[in-house]
Length: 69
Image (cartoon, rainbow, N blue to C red; front, top):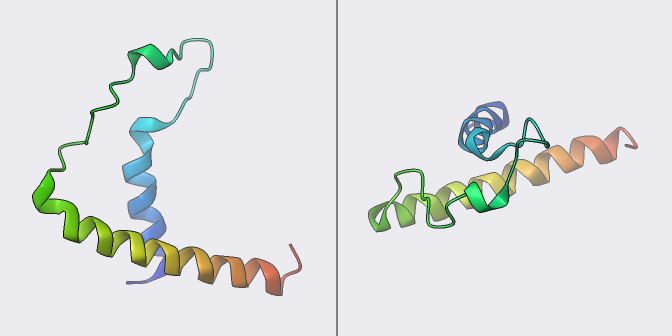
């Protein structure tokens, strides 16, 4: 899977957790048990996705390093 596709998927997963209005955000309103519908059957796929995400981050870091950023 290409890095851009991984970034797009990660963006979609992270969207519910973004704080867009700091004045209206209250941590007490967040359910720490929320799994976004994932269950124990999804754990192997989640581990695979995590490994792919780590690879994507490493690739992006190499790009930034090559550009001296």
